[in-house]
Image 1 (tube, rainbow, N blue to C red):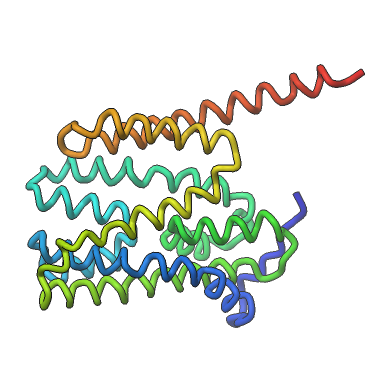
Image 2 (spheres, rainbow, N blue to C red; image 1 turned 90 degrees about the vertical axis):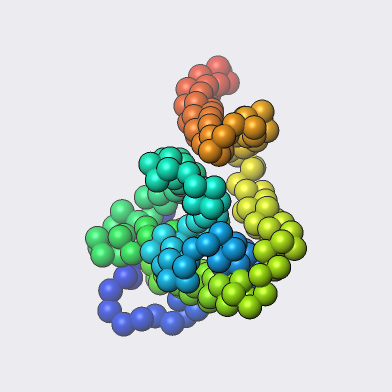
Length: 251
């Protein structure tokens, strides 16, 4: 892998920053209904406005926010909510491991900030950019542009959803949550070219389907754990088999 040139100090470099935001625009459109739905569901579940907005500001995790609101609305105990959202967000550990070779040279203040703003959408955009253009300059600004575009987009549409949830309560019953499924399907589809990822997705999907009847969203937790475990095992198996195949192909 060629070295990636980070220029993460000094003045804001608008060109890569704007490029990151521009390349993330399709994801912004896909996440907009997602944010509106979260805001309306949060209000419909009885959360106060400050808590609904605070979750988006401080948690900034769409899937975990949806799970938390659903569990809060059903009166689930707080430790179960913590455990469930933790398992749901375990995929971010894989994202971080993938991006670590590029972020290792960054100052700590950059790594902390970009880690907080890392989402599924930003990972898909940034990882694709870094993988195909590892010699591009100002990569940190590109990453930051994508991150902030997603962050402020999510805050805006959460606020819209909260306001709509207060003024149009029936909005939460219109079945708009299909946007969440469509957004995640588009993100996952970009990663399925790798066999370990495909295997992890198949295992997670099968477990989620079989365990969908478990209480407290336990099926979701089991599916996440099973998917991560399956992906890790497949990756380890591929690393073990590849050298063996290379040795056998040698004359």
